[in-house]
Image 1 (tube, one colour):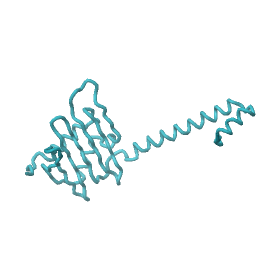
Image 2: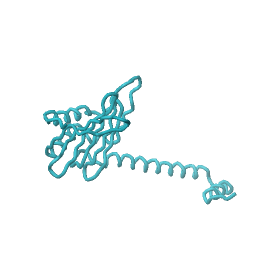
Image 3: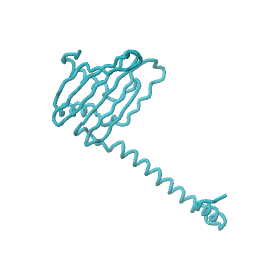
Length: 181
């Protein structure tokens, strides 16, 4: 059987009667440093996007339930953004994404709408399905904002604060558009 260097050092410390309190303290300090490092990495990752949206490349919001499956999509190109609305149809075991409406607006209008709902605070949201609820809407959201930073959120009948306001904004932006056949 081969001992690792750490096992030999630990065994040697026991044989030479080194002070156990010193060894225990070293272990506690090492564990504390590791915990602090993991916390910093998680906290920094959650907040590296910034406090608000300053630019956007794209956003996809997929909603599904028992009777619906739909998707909103934003693609920005400079000062112009395209907002698209899709539904999904299912036939013969295949899924087809069907464009229903599309409009264009200024990218700044999208940024303003996202900041109004504290969009960056949604990053990492994982809304577990509430106990006792047997039906509902599921969502999955991905966005690339603020110079390439990825934002993700998902939930099942559990949504980030102001989620419904953003959903309403999409509706308002697209309501007067002709449906694409």
